[in-house]
Length: 224
Image (cartoon, rainbow, N blue to C red):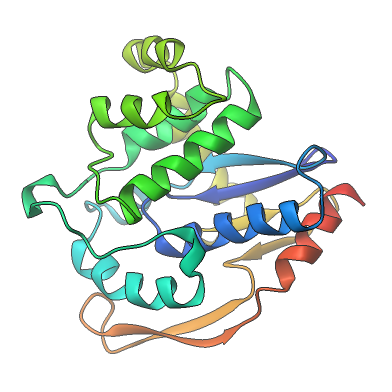
């Protein structure tokens, strides 16, 4: 994994609550260290629906959200409030949009990624739908939503999503989220050790250890 100085590569799925925690903590650490202009987050797709060959699992997220929301409430959460028929079974359109936003800038991609996570977890919006993704993009100051619509409609960034997923397997990404730094450091689900009590999707996740302070170190390493 070749990561440029001043960048943090994050492989993740927008529909992953653990990744929502990680992204919020990276943004907070960068802001706390006054490095907003010195460190960029390079989001890369780890689509769990391709890895697991199933839609975004309602039962798993229903168990994970109360746990992840409790450790990082500032990320924005609520239990799913929209009708069950509006549940986003796929995050591929959202992941594709984040990659398309990179054509504008990494800042645009960062802003859209975070806004789409909040749309799902804090606003119960169906980010599978094109019009929802574009509506979220329209509220992002750094994103040109019209240009994004053109990029989505010609489909050229879907290939990037699939390529990144395959590259993740070869570079050692263990899942969502997995962070890579310029100095060669990489860590899966930074600072968190957890296990499932009972069968995955039937029981519930238990956090064995949570060390959010690791995020300051990750951001510092990006500019070291």
